Image (cartoon, rainbow, N blue to C red):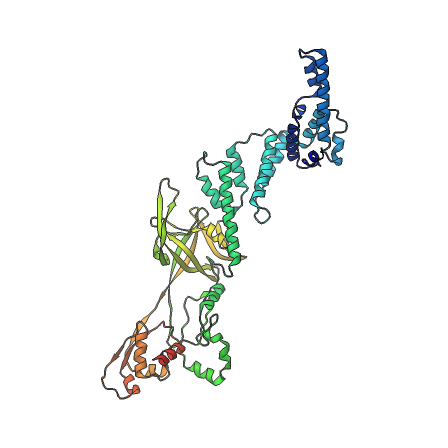
Length: 498
């Protein structure tokens, strides 16, 4: 008996459906469940009406009363003291069970309304609960709803479950919507949702372990920091800073600093610099100018796309071949497109008077695609948020808006600028003395080697006589590369190794 008491907790007014299920299971095990199905008076009348002897009738009535008392004891022992008042005045187990059921079990139209309202307001929150806990809560409401007499088909239950999922699961919900009703069972839907939940948990753990996770969209500050981490100092040889920021520069005297600065050639600014910021180290030895030929590429935000897709390779760079071709199903029935290559997109997003550097990796090139698609799911995986409101799709990184898509023809179009860098080349005819002085009085042989090191620079010797380096330089004709990043440090290294 002591073991039986521990099987079912005391009923305190909450979770009646669970307590009722446990009690029915226990009474069925004790062969007492039939006592709850028929009133005691009806059972006694049935014995009196049976064709058995009077002695047998007496014995059967005694057995009924004994079983009823045992069933009543099992129920009362599992009701908390705070709720014993509901059962104290009841004589039979059937009366006790009926009273508890009518009081605490939701029945009728009122019960259905409360449960349906609870079902409509139910939402899965990954930050507060696990997916399995959400499934259990959903099953409890559906079970209570059935107990009120409501008829729920499996398709209705599937629809209600998908409605409880948050917006980040829209890609899975969209994929499930394309399946036939025969395949769309509760077990299949739950399996797909569990798979998606495990993928998200794995990616979140991976992103936490990475010190610098890859970003689809990078701000100018992040792009600059990433470049600095990969850049090697030409003064000390270490990574992570420019030569102008090197601490060893502080050991040089003020006279040496001025002397070094005087050797620099004029440096022109980048005409497409971000937010008016320009930063130059004192490493340039040639005049530089960057011409920005700006083009715009239109991307459509798509919550159903699992990858970033582009219709051709004109807008992406670093194109590579996929190990295995990827087949893409489109809305048109029976039509499948194939992607065999992928690349990366680099551009800029203009929001108001601010410009943000954009980097989109692993863009599948899909010939035959009509528009470029930007996957909302991939953006969310990179830690971004996409909010659709008032005819605009805003891409947020934290509280900062880094992209705005406008709604046109029922599509959210995001315009990103492409920067095509063009190096200008001009020919100069005349004396080479100017370059001789610019390059620290470099000799003729070194100047000739310099023209061979850099692509686009040619030299011509008009005289075969060799008097001295200064004389020979006068007969040089140079092609000057307008955009050339060659530091004096590199030049000195070449001279020392010659």
